[in-house]
Each structure stands twice: as C-alpha cells, then as structure tokens.
Length: 276
Image 1 (cartoon, rainbow, N blue to C red):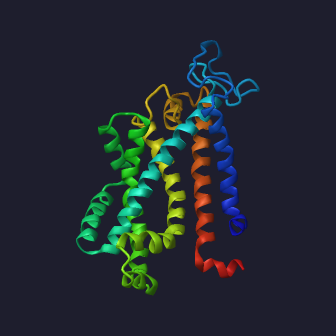
Image 2: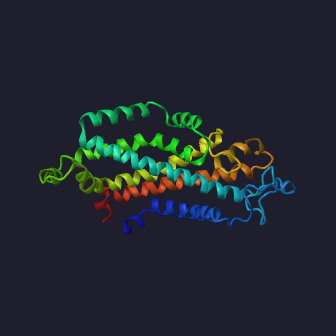
C-alpha cells in the first residue's frame, strides 16, 4: 500500500473513482435530490443551477440524479461481468497452462474462436440474443473478456510449472489442484489484479456502447450510454444533457485506467529497485 501511494497515477485514479463511487452509493440508497425516472414537464430544459446541478432533460428529469443512478448501474454490470470473467478465465488459464495436453488444446481452441470476433461485435451479438436485463448484459460482457484472462493467466503458469518448488510439491505427492491453488495462483495474483482494473474500464465502455445502441439496460432504468443516445438531438438545445453523461463515462474509464497503470507499476517486480 505504501508503494501504491507513491504512484501519482494510482492516486489520481483512486480519487476519481472514490468520488464516483460516493455518488453511486447515494443513488443506491435513494439519497439523490430527485427521482431519476420521475418526469416533470414544467421543468424541462432547465440549465444547470443550484436546484438542478446538471440541468434537466426534455422530460424535466434531473440530469444529475440520472447520471448518478447511471453510474451505479454501469458499475454493477461492469463489476459482475469482470468477476465472472476473472473466475472463469483464471481457472481456464490455470488448467490450460498446468495440465497442458488435450486440456490446453481444448481451452486454447475456444479462446482462439472468441478472439476471432471483435469484442464489441461479440458483445452485441450476445446481448441481442439474450433477454435484456442487467444480469444478461453482464454475462454477455463477461464472455467477451474470459479469453483475455485465460491468455493473461496461461503464460505465467507455463513458466511457474517448471520452477523447482512446484516440482518439489509434485514430488511430495500433492494433487495438481493443491499445487495450482497453493503455489501457482498466489504468484500470479498481481497480474490478475492489474488485469481486473483494466478490464473494468473496458467493461464500463462496452456497457455504455451497448446502451447507446439500444441493447443495454432497458428503460426506464438510467444508463449513461442511453442518456448519450437520447441527448444527440438535443445538443444544440440543451448541451448539458450530453456533456454530463459523456464526461462521467470518460472519468470512469480514465480513473480505472489510471488505477490499473498505477497497480501495474507498483506490482511489477522490475520497478521495485527503481522505487527504492
């Protein structure tokens, strides 16, 4: 943690994410100044002010409240998606790299098939087939990022399986799963943590893209991507309806990327000598 505090990127990313997380918590507990889905036609197209920090949209809905709720929805989908991808991808990479043979060939074949599709196109296809709710959107995004975690995990495992202490554990009669979980997995945790931080930023962007294209969280639940889509025709009438959700998406992605870069610099053994 001390080394992490010395990373300007990690500190900046953590500060941005802390602010956005606080806003999302307020939304989850219903502590927003206005109901994010309640319409108030007499208050439509009000510019940002003390009463409405980010103004109101074409239905008189408070943009700040909708953005705050959208952050919570996007964060929930991204976290669930990356959690699934991390669990399945890490286990797949461990089995592929440690067992080799037919397991490596089968997992590698599935990985190559998934990598053959552009990530957004694959997410679009899956989201179009599945029922539209936040969980199925998270599953669609998770499937896209599973092969990334498999590749990230498999390489280090191939090297670790040849190290002396792993061979010694094999010689003592420990099972393969015991060796993978006790000796291999702890040594690749830092790599997985960095990949999780970076994948969260990609998942947020993917969810916003799906919502923008009409395949994300169904209305009336607020979504940053759908808010940007709705505000396209209002950019000259009420530009704040586009600027607010767009800026928050950028802040989310940049904050997560900065945190991921800081974690990578901190956890990379090659940088330890430089920091000392």
